[in-house]
Image (cartoon, rainbow, N blue to C red):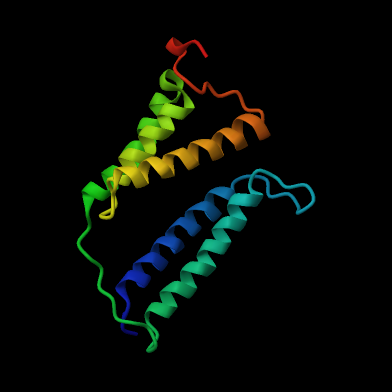
Length: 153
C-alpha cells in the first residue's frame, strides 16, 4: 500500500511505538482485576488503546480517501521551546514557587507558537495558575509553595 498522508502515518507509528512500550512495561507488573487494579493495569490498558489507535491512524493514512499531506522539516527550536520550560518548571518549582514557575513555563512555551503574543501568554498563564492553585492546593490539599520563600508567604 502507498502512504498518502505522511503526517498521519508517522503519528500512527508513534502511537504504536508508545503503545508497545507501555504495554510491554506494564505487563511486567501485577495486572490485577478491574475491581482491584494492580500496578500494571493502567499502563497495559493504555498501551493497548494506543496500539489500536495507532493501527487505525496508520491504516487511514493509506486509505484512498486520505488527504495528501507531507511531513514538514522538523523544527528543533520548537521542541526546545516546548520541552525546555517543562524541565525548567521542575527545577524552579521549589525555589520560585508554583505561581512564578507556572508563569515562566507558559510564557517560554508560548514562544513555540508562530502566533505568540505576550498578552495571550499572560492571559493563558493567569488561567492556568488559577486552575492549578484551585485544583492542587485547595481541592486536593497538596502542599505546594506558592511563592518564593523570600516573600515570606
